[in-house]
Image (cartoon, rainbow, N blue to C red):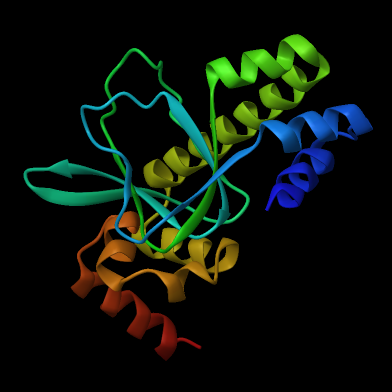
Amino acid sequence: MKEKVVSYFSAIQTLSADEAKAIADSAVIKKYCKGDFLVREGQYASDTFFVLEGLVRQYNLIDGEEKTTAFFTENQWVLSLGTADVPSKYYWICEEDCYLLIGNDQKAQNIFDQFPRLESIARKIVENAFIDYQHTINTYLTDSPEQRYIRLLESKPDLIQRIPQYQLASYIGVKPESLSRIRKRMAKNR
């Protein structure tokens, strides 16, 4: 698993042998079981997670109903773009058994002190996560639920097979019955 971590960072920027070794040596990888929570609403999200294997879902509760806001799969970061001193408004739950790399600001700062160049890689990671979040928000503001479903089919076709229909419906902003109608309409138009 540590080789996957080093490969991921190497794909962003070529690493020296010492940098690669430091990343591998400092990598904390943990297995989580399906149904395990990484964070709950009201808790502080001080750790970040990198999905090596598995699927993590982000949701919040509105009037007792789960509203799915994100799915994180292999090679994606599960991180809060807020500050660590503000309680989370979300739940992060493992929807499959997961292997996750665990990081936090203190661990990152320790490795940056030793290898300052790695800080620019971390900045790129956070920038890319922010761009992904911004893109998701923009599609919710401009696209219809059917367009969001089509984008999901195009960008993450495997996700459709990995999550229950009610979570998929929540993610695109409709009830499960509406998602069924969207699917029927799309099948009819093929």
